[in-house]
Image (cartoon, rainbow, N blue to C red; front, side, top):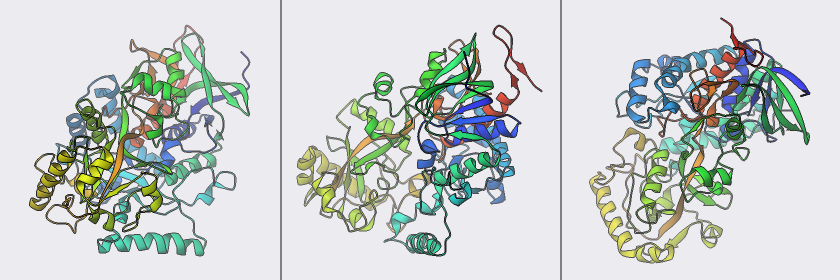
Length: 561
């Protein structure tokens, strides 16, 4: 086979996992190339909140928050019931030990991280959990530092907003802190900064921007619009890739290894129908369009084992005119509840979004619950934001006309319009309203956890997550089991090497991020539980590949000391 390009390490995908892997391999002295299938850098990371969950990091300690490896391991072992190959003892321990080291290493390369203090773990009351949280995020980033060629190639949030501040924006009409935070973001950081020529992006786009700058400063090649076609093998080893560049297939040799970090398969309908529970749709995901499972399938084609292909990073989702919208805070704020077609609640609406997805599918086996229905009292519409275009007190006529949101003057009328059982909805609203008066959700304990209260309205008493469903007009929106991306994929070992079904290593092949079955099992320990492992195992893969000299077929690989 004739190779059109030869390098040490080929990285497939430009999300946080891929870029961190490339940085690690380059920092270890390797020549590296990153291949991205789309015309933008960053994948789902760039579209995300950009947090990464790293327990026991030094930025926590600098803020006076205590943590330890032992506490974090206790927490993960308590909340992750699966002890299978995707979340083995070795992988959990590697993640927790390498995470703090990764943060310091990236700082040494010029990366600026910020501790999102106060953003709790998602089960903070469980053994080892932390109310203060373990989430880090990128500092605000000036995209002009990437130069003319790259500054517009990262899909970034243009509003300079840190994740820890985002919780305040829905409360702009309710609290002084919500109003002041919103004015600071809109008037100062957005309008004034632009007038004086100061540009900053935030969240996932800032994270990707910083990582990309690290690579560009170190002469790492990044090829966009270059999708993976297949892996190239010699004997039992992966030695390169076939990719499509400028419409032509090209063979690229990797002297030390190929790292798959191309995201999940959320936009591959055939794979979703094959592996995942039904109903399922590629139209419900907010994952990056380039996440079509090509990396996972390429691994399968060379004998890789997979696990948890039925899972995703579930997220209750609205289908707006602009596309899927994740229900992060709307479902948690007072004067709202989620019901199924019988009018019954079936979960704690304020809990972790992955748990919401699990419970919606579980409920659907009993009574139609896909879609479910977000029911709002008029006070929710008066006070809070919904989606990207429904401001407090403003419900666009187009949203009503298109059926995105439905309005009625009574709960029975709302039930008839939505196809919900009338008696069930009325009875549930009455029971829920009594819970709101008493301050205690006796059915699902909404508002009991510090995580529930993170997205709440502290001006509402006695429970900031509960509000009576009594005051018309009432509103309803359909809630779908959307996702941030798929959770299952290739199995890896503690060095991020891809494994076969018998547990043997596929030489020369590594994986990170949503190309892999998650170390988090089927749960979500805290904000950034997708990006954190992607970065840690990306670093692990890049470093390990740098130690390997590929042997000829039939020989063992040589690993440097």
